[in-house]
Image (cartoon, rainbow, N blue to C red; front, side, top):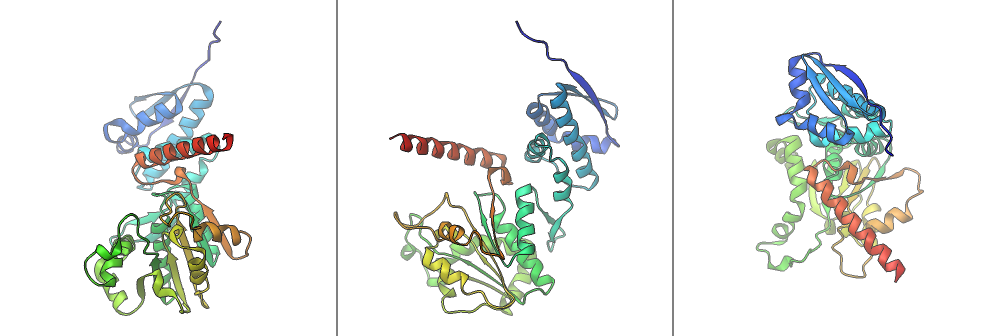
Length: 331
């Protein structure tokens, strides 16, 4: 014998036809995602939306619709991934966090684009950088670890909080040998540093970047160049830190001088070190977990802001890895 589930209907008023078009998205994809994720039916009549479904589901959908309308009023772009993320927050009773995130502009690029946090994890990450001298950001690809660190570095220069930016990466070979690449040492390591160049071009513009680099305000270098230095009054970013050894990580962290700040980013699921080598990032987050002035931010698949398939790919690999761990424990 099945029990009938009573349905409720709630209305949401949309202020204009333009807002309605933005709400629905290209080929109505935003509304289709909202209906699918919440298990509700949404109908439109003039400038009013009718949401029908189980009471709990309708409440979530209405909360998301209201937040989406707030975003549209602020000229914020809406896409399928943002709708899905908003639904997940609303289910947890955290719909108000959507507005808080979207109102926090991290940096305005040279083209006038506003860089903002798009997830709760990213907001916590940015707040950690604002409050701490050293921040570790650990999480999967596509969570904005490097890009947001670069944005905060550029902001620190613009606000004259530091006098220079130092960006570095370990040049670890991932299946290919550096010696086979043409050119001198700088030519060989440039491909490893390319993501850092790209982020700076996007935020500052190529001309401004070239001018600042020529003045020594911006330095992009492989990690091997850090040994023996003391970096004062600098915003220092270490990217791909999972590919450092514990010895390299200690060397890097102790380069920090007066008036400096550090952000260390990495993904512990993509370690390219030789088998049996401990990652300096894993080691440091264990050793430094309770040191005052240091904060460790853990980003997850929920914080992925690339193509929505990236999140699905990461979750599929996580599921596979957890299954392997269970099998190993049984054996």
